[in-house]
Image (cartoon, rainbow, N blue to C red):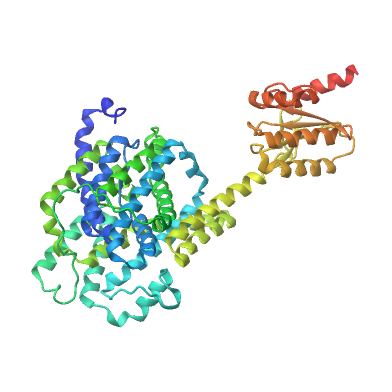
Length: 559
């Protein structure tokens, strides 16, 4: 806030106020819906939303992002903490608060160690698959509420998974409450029409109000349409949960870790999207602090886990929100609602909350990107589908872990087996290019030029050495000089440098010189510190391939 508030343009005030009121109209029904999704009392969704926007107002770097409860976080929280609670409803709420505080602690620790860059190791294909799986998983949790079927914790053979819920609903369709289904389907239709024809309007709030009016003037509640019931009024107060046992706390750690990862990934994705759209800079590490404090505030304020919401952020952007001041307006509206208007929502049908969740998560299923992955890269599509099926078969918690592991495996695979090229010279120039990409380039009879399209470090050192020797073996036996072009290898670690030293000795025993071109000053310094530079007759910073060959040729002539 100390950075953006002094530079605030007063002409933006009207836009920020309008955007804040509009966003708050979305936060209220979604907060109630996501509280239900998290198996928490409805007011906790409003508490979480209020505390989150206040924290982000002071600490966030994005001008458009709105932080609060999200569908994916709510369902992951419910499934993870629900497993730890083992059906003990008395302790569930306390464990949710402990987990939320742990998420905040993890984020603050990550901020302190400046590890915001790690999120970029999770590939887009994994996030696409996870999001699609999360959308289907979340929809499955709302089927019973939508149809008015008494929910069950058993999915038969499939257990408490997406397939288990679908199986349970399919085998209990005869128990459907027609009035509940009619209200829910009507809500879905109105929400979809609003998204299509009035994307900037607070359609969800309109649907909520209409459904409350409907329940107030009819006897639908007596006919089996369940309502939210009484919601306590008043602002959130400091909530200090009882500390669970060491064993329980240990069981909550992986749940909190996965929630932290998902919360930050959701948030930073929205942050980067709107920063690129409006051409301003954000700070990934500062976002860790904002995320951490928002979750700490939500936890101690009696709410649950929060993160950056793409849908609410997009709404904020669409209606013209200019700065973080929008969060202050959202907070003021939520304060008014909590103090004066909670009684209005007592007659809100549960099936309408289910309808809001179902429509809200449809945006998570990006079918066009999945189709594009299928046509562009079968391997990336397979990774996306693995993450999707992981969520559907073993749940949101393990789905997150599958996504993380797949991301790391893909990253490790790529960096340990980098793309390599033999280079050739473009006739009449001093430029060297990849022969497999530019067949017109020619090689020099006694010179072999080689480049790795990656940093050189211990994990890919052996692969690079083997590849270079294999390529060299395919050339004529009269090669006397190997030039290692370091253009794409701006860093070389000690393990890779040791490999290069061993390679120089192996080539030297065959009468072949090894030289380096386009080396960064830091790489040259490493070679000199190791004594390696002296063995290869010196390395000059950023010396071109052509210059290296010329210098070597001059040395050969002088001998």
